[in-house]
Length: 382
Ligand code: FES
Ligand SMILES: [Fe+2]
Image 1 (cartoon, protein in one colour):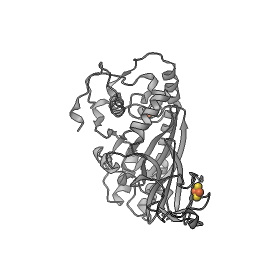
Image 2 (cartoon, helix red, strand yellow; image 1 turned 90 degrees about the horizontal axis):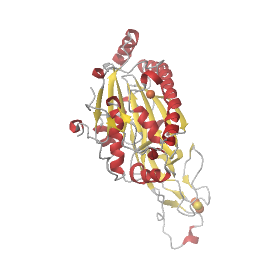
Image 3 (cartoon, helix red, strand yellow; image 1 turned 45 degrees about the horizontal axis):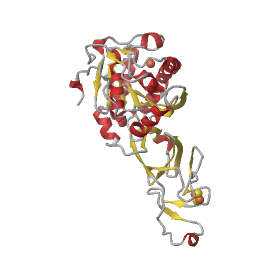
Image 4 (cartoon, protein in one colour; image 1 turned 120 degrees about the vertical axis):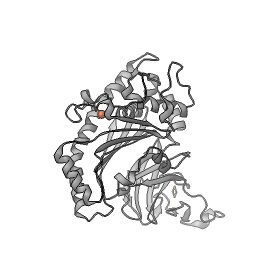
């Protein structure tokens, strides 16, 4: 069932989806202090494995050392070069490629400086790399460049989402990155409603489930949609058999979680797909897609292998869904950029998770919710 009894207003003005000043405010107040999935644990198979990337305009270096993934600003404290511009790789030493300063792989403090006496009286350990926060949940690597109020594990728990159940390093079976020519909110909001299903997904989802089969949950950290999963008899039988081999019972449902602002995970009992919407600019979003098979914790059992094959089959369906959404969102962006209306837009009860997201964003931006907006039932928000 839905939460609101009535339709709802669009809370964000159209220019919020393309205006540069609005975007800069979002970066400072909402995006930098939040958690974002930028990689998966499969990117770090051994100590020394690293990934370099840009998040919200900041160059970052994630590298595994001592069995854990550590995050740093990819800026050398000596003369500000990036340590590396290779997108990924594996190095025995964390070292800058300009003058060869070496850093401790866990703390980022300086370890070896060529011709160190020339820097007297600099002490070893001074002038280290700037650390950024990293949290690994299941097979997902979350990063925050700012100071998040809570750990991502706590925030995910508030959404009743445990990525460790659905994602694991050996369960990852595919990855794709797509550049969407849209504001990140256009792409996120598309995933928060099932109203577009009949028009956009006629060959995949075909129709949206009826209201009485849907459940929306709104929490301080995000929102969730639960609905029916695949009911085809062969699918149900196969999944029950494979999951039974793992000692897991099949619930048969589908759950989509949105953790504010950019993380979404859609999961069934046997399959999960991550969509991480990483803003590149006011009009460009880098979508990281990764998909996973449910696993037992060991990659060697026959059931694990069969579940990975089964997840590979399911991924074709889900990637088609992603492609269908990717094709429609630029049209939303084009319309938003063409509208001069300060207000406008109307949100149905089926789209109410969008309003919850927009409220969260306005709160982060310290902007008032438009007066006309009536609150939804707050009973569902802890
Ligand atoms: S800039 Fe990195 S060692 Fe000089
Ligand atoms: Fe969709």
